[in-house]
Amino acid sequence: LHSPGAASKFRTAMRSAQRGPGPSLMPATNLMNAKPPMMNVAPAVQPDIAEAATQLTKTLESNSRSAAGDLFELLQDADRGYAFHQPGWPALLKTAGLREIPAPVADRFRVAEVCSNWGAFPEIKRAWATVDNSLFLWRFDSQNDVPAEYSGEDQAIYAVGLAKARPGVFIEAIQYLLVLATPMEMVLLGVCVDAKTDELALQPLPMYTTPSDAVCMAAITSTPEGRIFCGGRDGNLYELTYSNSSGWRGGRRCQKIQVSGLLSRLVPSVLKLWPSDPTPLALTQIVVDPARRLLYTLSKGGVITLYDLGADAASPARRVAEYRHPAERAGSGTKRVVHMAVVSPGESRHLHLVVVCSNGARVYLTTAAA
Image 1 (cartoon, rainbow, N blue to C red):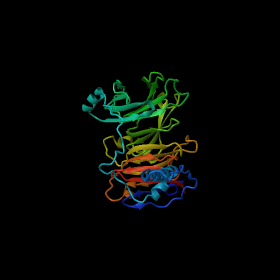
Image 2: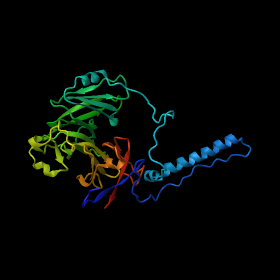
Image 3: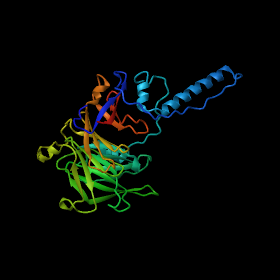
């Protein structure tokens, strides 16, 4: 842990087969003590039925304790590390359905020249894909949906994000904003979704673009309030702000504000990293914890940085802590971090972030006042 002078710091708690339980944290004090109803079995009931009732009661009690317990305590109380799925056991996951990529999108993937990416936006029930300078959107719950295509950019699209439109800035029909990042600029598109038919329309917003300053973005996310954050391949965090007035250069109505690495502003843009540079500094993921008003970034080199968004989630993002190479805590043989996700307050009062490593091991992190 390295956070000199920070207002918060990371502590690590992990339960794995390789290393055993992590350092102790303060136990939860307000855990529920609910117990399942007891099952009374008459003596005359046959022995096999009585045994079944006994086992059912034990299972209900165990489930009740699990539901009432804090995730951190459940990990501490575990009598072993990871349990791997055994051959012949019932499947842990069940496939609900499969949806093929629409033919027009698959055809474009085959002839991609620069880059291609894909993902999903559950808020608007759409899957998305980018192929070079084209963006495709289609419903992931319908096999026959015709993809909508946007090809209004000259440069390849390297990152895509979705944000809730702030009230009072755009017309009421624009409920969301698509954020597109190319090597030359960042672009906002209005997203209109019909409440009755669920049809989607994209609205170009010519005044809502801003130069990238030779920084290519690799990750884009947003807060429930509509704040937009971008992770650059130069290793810095940026916030994209916008308004309904032309207050910035060139009459533009949005701008990119650098949050971290302020000294890099002095570096000429021609010396900054281009998209093809495989730098370990590049930010590959950004996640927001809306309940605790925190933001985390993950770099390609495995560095996690914590930012505080303020008590109202509207303050300037403030860097408060950094944790380097969490995969090393998962034991030997672990190569890298592949994903991170927020642990909600409903799951744990002590654990705030889970990091998934390339070997499947999970490392749990928590934030605490210094």
